[in-house]
Image (cartoon, rainbow, N blue to C red; front, side, top):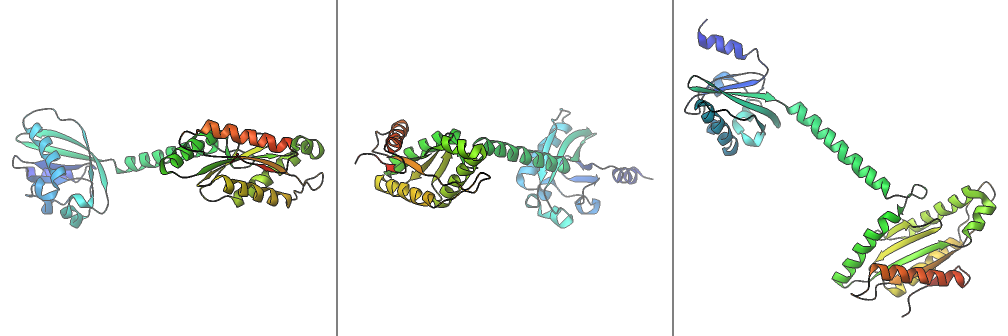
Length: 304
């Protein structure tokens, strides 16, 4: 068996893909585990003929360093169908990742390509799962477990964003606070479970009423807030009246009997570029206090 035959036989036994490159960057011999490695098809072809400019330049540089006797660093390489139409014809069907080592053999360079496609796919799946888990944790960390709406941690960033956008684009925006009247009495009469059912019913009703851009948050034991973009003072008052009307029709079934309840509402609307999130929140809270002190089941809005 000649040396060439022995080399060809040896290359057929290994799983890595091997290209033996001469000083003119031509393939002398090749073999190994890749579907696209075919001795008769690749022999004599230059790296520039087989690969696009970027890949050919990388491999040529590694080979030149090796032929000069210099140490080369291990390199990762992605081969895609776009990288080499020639290899597509020979069997390259999808992107493949390789870990490339280059060494010297007399006046030639040996490129050894270890297939790490499966490793990369596993890494990608793991990274996707990690990001998904982080997003889920972040999402869960901003949700109220009882009602499913956002919790108070999410309100301030969203309110700040809404106010900033309204000022920048000269829009309106409003903050609406909704508080359940006599909630402590509901808990005493119908138990904690009854109070929870009332909160869930209120949150569910508000979810149905709000627009897609509106932002609903539970900010306290019996209090919810709605951030309403592009909503001025009169519109926020109208929203408050609709909430009171809808709530008056609700009847919540509990083990201790049906529960009917009412709410008080305070609103505040952006007054101009000098207004702030803190100012709006303070006015909405003050207006809510006025509504409750006035007997509840009513809406109080900013002064005109």
